[in-house]
Amino acid sequence: MPNSNVLIIESDGTRADIVASAMQFMGYFPQRWDASLPLDAIAREWRAIYVGGIENASTCEQLMASLDVQASQTLVLVGADSPQLGRLSKVDSAYAAQVEVLDFPLRYERLAEAVRRTPAPRINTSVLRLVGNSAAMGRVNALIRQVSPFDSSVLVLGESGTGKEMVARAIHDCSPRREKPFVAINCGAIPAELLESELFGHEKGAFTGAISTRKGRFEMAEGGTLFLDEIGDMSLPMQVKLLRVLQERMYERVGSNRTQRCDVRIIAATHRNLEAGTAEGRFREDLYYRLSVFPLEMPALREHLEDMPDLISEFNQRLQRRGLGSVRFSGSAMQALRQHTWPGNVRELSNLVERLAILYPNGEVRANDLPEKYRGVQPIDEASGSILRAMLDGQSKPAPTQNRVSLDTEVLLPEGGVDLKDHLADIEVGLIRQALDITDGVVAHAAKLLHMQRTTLVEKLRKYGLQSCCRANETSPQSGTAVA
Image (cartoon, one colour):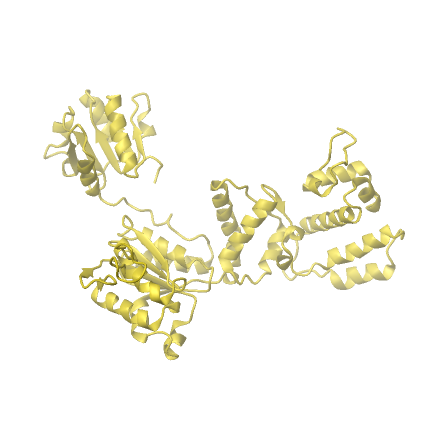
């Protein structure tokens, strides 16, 4: 949906500001119509339109015709003294069924009542999808689209970090309940003796510490969706109470004998094997079948590694919205990441991208820049390190046996091939870093160790963004300024 979803057509600036402020307070994004704007600039779908003091009937007709206004989708708010009220509210008007009249001075209660009549906006479900173009994620997105329109209970299964809550939110956002609350609770993070109060609420004085009446998550999610994360960690006594609510759609607050009805959709998730849990008596079989009307299993990241570039791009966009820099991965870095087992799945990848974006803001990360556990075996760097140290000790060349061992036995071509240019750049960066480490960051000494001109090394340091590895008092011969 565009940033602005309510259009205000009003020639009186004071009144337009009043309506805009009220709509903004209610969570909408109002935009005032400007006669100087071309019609195609506002010719799009709006959630609501306010029509006030616009004297020219033909201008109003032309304006309304240019908008993507549908009687079944768009609320038309009309000021009681608007010259257009009669025309818009006629029986034969396309907008008659959606017209709400507002008196001035404007009353917030009346405006809120009118807005509640607004039909839910049409949702483009192709946009509300989980990131990834692999076959595995394609199946997940297809299942989300299929189950979303119905109120059936959904059980999301999968390892920790695969994005089970994202699935629940996507189902809610694609469902008819999308305008109502989405409430999540982690059943494994709350002590068993407090979970009942968290779910159903409690009355004042119901137990020690209950100093006031409190709503539970069922009550908060009324009309919307309740997401029960880590349902497999719920205690057996609590499972019995939850089963009753799911069967009868009724519950009582702790300390109350007044029964309350609930209208919520239940989506549960767990990383545990609930079928094995029922066989072992750790999870009630009747509750399992009540929850798993529509089971949906999330694939582990290692099962759809082809989605990694799309996921990294998505994480970069999120980081930029938070004010952090993005990060790029070289071909060799991506190859190394594909070899990792990813026990933490997508959450682990997200954390890694954020960590590297902090370390290398808006830079490129190569295989040697990755944390050690993501690099795999790096025999080339180890061999080159021994070569450099040998050279520093006075040997002009490494022993032939050293060279032969590193080339013949340690440098092996991966099964999937290698980007040679990128791989050689990684080797060069590794050698430069080790030379700087050995020489305590003195560029002149590192250049001598690498058998190159100092100016050449300075250019390579700039190329690879390695100035921070140099000593602060190292200066560039061209500029006389510090390299680092």
